[in-house]
Length: 275
Image 1 (cartoon, rainbow, N blue to C red):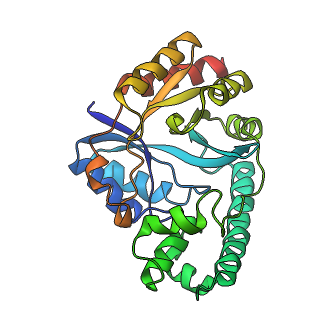
Image 2: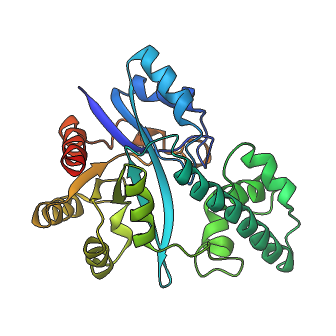
Protein backbone atom coordinates (compact mmCIF):
# COMPACT_ATOMS: atom_id res chain seq x y z
CA UNK A 1 0.00 0.00 0.00
CA UNK A 2 1.32 3.44 -0.94
CA UNK A 3 0.29 6.89 0.27
CA UNK A 4 -2.75 7.52 2.46
CA UNK A 5 -4.51 10.91 2.41
CA UNK A 6 -7.22 11.28 5.03
CA UNK A 7 -8.17 14.95 4.54
CA UNK A 8 -9.55 16.15 1.20
CA UNK A 9 -12.54 18.13 -0.07
CA UNK A 10 -14.72 17.95 -3.18
CA UNK A 11 -17.30 20.15 -4.88
CA UNK A 12 -19.84 18.87 -2.36
CA UNK A 13 -18.32 21.33 0.15
CA UNK A 14 -15.58 23.86 -0.61
CA UNK A 15 -13.40 21.83 -2.98
CA UNK A 16 -13.04 22.47 -6.70
CA UNK A 17 -13.19 18.89 -8.04
CA UNK A 18 -16.01 16.36 -8.26
CA UNK A 19 -15.49 13.14 -6.28
CA UNK A 20 -14.51 11.28 -9.46
CA UNK A 21 -12.03 13.99 -10.46
CA UNK A 22 -10.50 14.00 -6.98
CA UNK A 23 -10.12 10.21 -6.86
CA UNK A 24 -8.43 10.24 -10.28
CA UNK A 25 -6.08 13.05 -9.24
CA UNK A 26 -5.28 11.18 -6.03
CA UNK A 27 -4.46 8.03 -7.99
CA UNK A 28 -2.19 10.03 -10.31
CA UNK A 29 -0.47 11.43 -7.19
CA UNK A 30 0.37 7.97 -5.88
CA UNK A 31 -2.40 7.78 -3.28
CA UNK A 32 -3.90 4.34 -2.64
CA UNK A 33 -6.20 5.18 0.27
CA UNK A 34 -8.28 8.36 0.35
CA UNK A 35 -10.84 9.90 2.67
CA UNK A 36 -13.10 12.66 1.41
CA UNK A 37 -13.87 14.86 4.41
CA UNK A 38 -16.32 17.39 3.05
CA UNK A 39 -17.77 19.87 5.54
CA UNK A 40 -21.04 18.60 7.05
CA UNK A 41 -21.59 16.45 3.98
CA UNK A 42 -21.28 12.79 2.95
CA UNK A 43 -22.87 13.25 -0.48
CA UNK A 44 -19.62 12.61 -2.36
CA UNK A 45 -18.90 9.22 -0.79
CA UNK A 46 -20.85 6.89 -3.09
CA UNK A 47 -19.48 8.39 -6.32
CA UNK A 48 -15.92 8.33 -4.95
CA UNK A 49 -16.30 4.78 -3.61
CA UNK A 50 -17.61 3.40 -6.91
CA UNK A 51 -14.92 5.09 -9.00
CA UNK A 52 -12.26 4.15 -6.46
CA UNK A 53 -13.17 0.47 -6.90
CA UNK A 54 -12.65 0.85 -10.65
CA UNK A 55 -9.16 2.33 -10.46
CA UNK A 56 -7.84 0.78 -7.25
CA UNK A 57 -8.21 3.57 -4.66
CA UNK A 58 -9.76 2.62 -1.33
CA UNK A 59 -12.22 5.24 -0.08
CA UNK A 60 -12.70 5.62 3.68
CA UNK A 61 -15.94 7.40 4.63
CA UNK A 62 -15.20 10.70 6.34
CA UNK A 63 -16.60 14.11 7.18
CA UNK A 64 -15.37 17.35 8.77
CA UNK A 65 -17.58 18.93 11.44
CA UNK A 66 -17.14 22.44 12.87
CA UNK A 67 -17.41 22.86 16.65
CA UNK A 68 -16.47 25.68 18.97
CA UNK A 69 -14.96 26.16 22.41
CA UNK A 70 -15.77 29.65 23.71
CA UNK A 71 -14.60 31.95 20.86
CA UNK A 72 -12.40 29.38 19.09
CA UNK A 73 -13.61 27.30 16.14
CA UNK A 74 -12.45 23.69 16.35
CA UNK A 75 -12.74 21.35 13.36
CA UNK A 76 -13.26 17.65 14.00
CA UNK A 77 -12.53 14.99 11.38
CA UNK A 78 -14.53 11.75 11.49
CA UNK A 79 -13.46 8.47 9.89
CA UNK A 80 -15.12 5.11 9.30
CA UNK A 81 -18.55 6.53 10.05
CA UNK A 82 -21.51 4.66 8.56
CA UNK A 83 -22.11 6.68 5.35
CA UNK A 84 -25.87 6.05 5.33
CA UNK A 85 -26.50 6.44 9.06
CA UNK A 86 -29.88 8.20 9.31
CA UNK A 87 -29.20 9.90 12.66
CA UNK A 88 -25.87 11.27 11.42
CA UNK A 89 -27.49 12.53 8.23
CA UNK A 90 -30.13 14.36 10.27
CA UNK A 91 -27.39 16.19 12.16
CA UNK A 92 -25.51 17.01 8.96
CA UNK A 93 -28.68 18.29 7.30
CA UNK A 94 -29.27 20.58 10.26
CA UNK A 95 -25.70 21.92 10.03
CA UNK A 96 -26.07 22.53 6.29
CA UNK A 97 -29.26 24.50 6.90
CA UNK A 98 -27.47 26.55 9.54
CA UNK A 99 -24.64 27.19 7.07
CA UNK A 100 -27.17 28.76 4.70
CA UNK A 101 -28.59 30.98 7.45
CA UNK A 102 -25.07 32.05 8.41
CA UNK A 103 -24.17 32.83 4.79
CA UNK A 104 -27.22 35.09 4.52
CA UNK A 105 -26.19 36.94 7.69
CA UNK A 106 -22.64 37.42 6.38
CA UNK A 107 -23.99 38.76 3.08
CA UNK A 108 -26.23 41.20 4.94
CA UNK A 109 -23.15 42.39 6.84
CA UNK A 110 -21.23 42.80 3.58
CA UNK A 111 -24.16 44.77 2.12
CA UNK A 112 -24.03 47.11 5.12
CA UNK A 113 -20.33 47.62 4.38
CA UNK A 114 -21.21 48.73 0.85
CA UNK A 115 -20.61 45.50 -1.09
CA UNK A 116 -23.12 44.66 -3.83
CA UNK A 117 -23.46 40.90 -3.38
CA UNK A 118 -26.47 38.59 -3.00
CA UNK A 119 -27.07 35.04 -1.80
CA UNK A 120 -27.83 34.16 -5.44
CA UNK A 121 -24.28 35.22 -6.37
CA UNK A 122 -22.93 32.83 -3.74
CA UNK A 123 -25.23 29.93 -4.68
CA UNK A 124 -24.07 30.27 -8.29
CA UNK A 125 -20.61 29.42 -6.98
CA UNK A 126 -21.54 26.76 -4.40
CA UNK A 127 -24.05 24.91 -6.64
CA UNK A 128 -24.56 21.48 -5.00
CA UNK A 129 -22.18 22.21 -2.14
CA UNK A 130 -22.86 22.92 1.51
CA UNK A 131 -22.49 26.72 1.37
CA UNK A 132 -19.66 28.28 3.33
CA UNK A 133 -17.37 31.29 3.60
CA UNK A 134 -15.07 30.07 0.79
CA UNK A 135 -17.99 30.35 -1.61
CA UNK A 136 -18.67 33.90 -0.42
CA UNK A 137 -15.01 34.76 -0.97
CA UNK A 138 -15.13 33.28 -4.48
CA UNK A 139 -18.31 35.22 -5.29
CA UNK A 140 -16.71 38.46 -4.08
CA UNK A 141 -13.69 37.76 -6.28
CA UNK A 142 -15.84 36.89 -9.30
CA UNK A 143 -17.69 40.21 -8.94
CA UNK A 144 -14.43 42.16 -8.67
CA UNK A 145 -15.16 43.29 -5.11
CA UNK A 146 -11.74 42.09 -3.91
CA UNK A 147 -8.40 41.47 -5.59
CA UNK A 148 -7.64 38.04 -4.13
CA UNK A 149 -9.47 35.14 -2.49
CA UNK A 150 -7.62 35.57 0.80
CA UNK A 151 -8.43 39.30 0.99
CA UNK A 152 -12.04 38.31 1.76
CA UNK A 153 -10.96 36.42 4.87
CA UNK A 154 -8.22 38.78 5.98
CA UNK A 155 -10.36 41.92 5.76
CA UNK A 156 -14.04 41.04 5.80
CA UNK A 157 -15.31 37.53 6.60
CA UNK A 158 -12.52 35.98 8.66
CA UNK A 159 -12.77 35.53 12.42
CA UNK A 160 -13.07 38.93 14.11
CA UNK A 161 -13.59 40.79 10.82
CA UNK A 162 -16.53 43.21 10.32
CA UNK A 163 -18.75 40.82 8.30
CA UNK A 164 -17.97 37.69 10.32
CA UNK A 165 -20.79 35.62 11.82
CA UNK A 166 -20.41 32.65 14.15
CA UNK A 167 -21.76 29.22 13.24
CA UNK A 168 -24.40 27.46 15.30
CA UNK A 169 -22.87 26.28 18.57
CA UNK A 170 -21.79 22.66 18.73
CA UNK A 171 -19.44 21.47 21.44
CA UNK A 172 -16.62 19.05 20.58
CA UNK A 173 -18.09 16.60 23.10
CA UNK A 174 -21.37 16.60 21.17
CA UNK A 175 -19.50 16.00 17.92
CA UNK A 176 -17.55 13.12 19.48
CA UNK A 177 -20.85 11.47 20.50
CA UNK A 178 -22.45 12.02 17.08
CA UNK A 179 -19.42 10.44 15.43
CA UNK A 180 -19.18 7.55 17.88
CA UNK A 181 -22.90 6.80 17.56
CA UNK A 182 -22.37 6.54 13.78
CA UNK A 183 -19.61 3.98 14.31
CA UNK A 184 -16.72 6.34 13.66
CA UNK A 185 -13.58 7.83 15.18
CA UNK A 186 -13.00 11.53 15.90
CA UNK A 187 -9.79 13.47 15.26
CA UNK A 188 -8.64 17.03 15.93
CA UNK A 189 -8.07 18.68 12.53
CA UNK A 190 -5.01 20.91 11.88
CA UNK A 191 -4.06 21.21 15.58
CA UNK A 192 -1.33 23.72 14.81
CA UNK A 193 -3.99 26.43 14.81
CA UNK A 194 -4.91 25.91 18.47
CA UNK A 195 -3.18 26.52 21.82
CA UNK A 196 -1.80 23.52 23.68
CA UNK A 197 -4.27 24.07 26.54
CA UNK A 198 -7.21 23.60 24.16
CA UNK A 199 -5.58 20.52 22.64
CA UNK A 200 -5.34 18.91 26.07
CA UNK A 201 -8.93 19.92 26.86
CA UNK A 202 -10.10 18.03 23.76
CA UNK A 203 -8.05 14.99 24.72
CA UNK A 204 -9.67 14.99 28.14
CA UNK A 205 -13.08 15.31 26.48
CA UNK A 206 -12.54 12.02 24.67
CA UNK A 207 -11.23 12.64 21.16
CA UNK A 208 -9.81 9.52 19.49
CA UNK A 209 -6.86 11.09 17.72
CA UNK A 210 -4.93 14.03 16.27
CA UNK A 211 -4.14 15.04 12.70
CA UNK A 212 -0.35 14.77 12.93
CA UNK A 213 0.40 15.37 9.24
CA UNK A 214 -1.07 18.56 7.75
CA UNK A 215 0.38 21.28 5.49
CA UNK A 216 0.21 23.77 8.36
CA UNK A 217 2.17 21.53 10.76
CA UNK A 218 5.93 22.15 10.83
CA UNK A 219 8.38 19.27 11.22
CA UNK A 220 8.77 20.24 14.87
CA UNK A 221 4.99 20.21 15.37
CA UNK A 222 4.69 16.80 13.70
CA UNK A 223 7.22 15.44 16.20
CA UNK A 224 5.36 17.14 19.08
CA UNK A 225 1.90 15.85 18.09
CA UNK A 226 3.24 12.34 17.53
CA UNK A 227 4.62 12.50 21.05
CA UNK A 228 1.22 13.60 22.38
CA UNK A 229 -0.44 10.72 20.50
CA UNK A 230 1.92 8.21 22.09
CA UNK A 231 1.68 9.76 25.57
CA UNK A 232 -2.13 9.67 25.67
CA UNK A 233 -2.63 6.43 23.68
CA UNK A 234 -4.37 8.27 20.87
CA UNK A 235 -4.53 7.57 17.14
CA UNK A 236 -2.94 9.73 14.47
CA UNK A 237 -4.17 10.78 11.06
CA UNK A 238 -2.81 12.91 8.28
CA UNK A 239 -3.52 14.39 4.89
CA UNK A 240 -3.21 17.25 2.46
CA UNK A 241 -6.43 19.17 3.25
CA UNK A 242 -6.64 19.47 -0.53
CA UNK A 243 -9.29 21.76 -2.03
CA UNK A 244 -8.01 22.74 -5.48
CA UNK A 245 -9.19 25.71 -7.50
CA UNK A 246 -8.62 29.16 -6.00
CA UNK A 247 -6.70 27.63 -3.07
CA UNK A 248 -3.85 26.84 -5.48
CA UNK A 249 -2.85 23.84 -3.36
CA UNK A 250 -2.44 21.19 -6.07
CA UNK A 251 1.13 20.53 -4.95
CA UNK A 252 -0.14 19.40 -1.51
CA UNK A 253 -1.86 16.29 -2.91
CA UNK A 254 0.67 13.48 -2.74
CA UNK A 255 3.08 15.60 -0.69
CA UNK A 256 1.30 15.53 2.68
CA UNK A 257 0.18 12.00 3.50
CA UNK A 258 0.27 9.29 6.14
CA UNK A 259 0.80 5.52 6.08
CA UNK A 260 -1.14 2.25 5.89
CA UNK A 261 -0.19 1.50 9.51
CA UNK A 262 -2.21 4.55 10.62
CA UNK A 263 -5.35 3.19 8.92
CA UNK A 264 -4.72 -0.26 10.37
CA UNK A 265 -4.47 1.22 13.87
CA UNK A 266 -7.86 2.88 13.34
CA UNK A 267 -9.40 -0.43 12.27
CA UNK A 268 -7.93 -2.19 15.26
CA UNK A 269 -9.31 0.47 17.62
CA UNK A 270 -12.78 0.07 16.10
CA UNK A 271 -12.58 -3.73 16.46
CA UNK A 272 -11.53 -3.36 20.08
CA UNK A 273 -14.35 -0.88 20.80
CA UNK A 274 -16.94 -3.21 19.26
CA UNK A 275 -15.70 -6.33 21.08
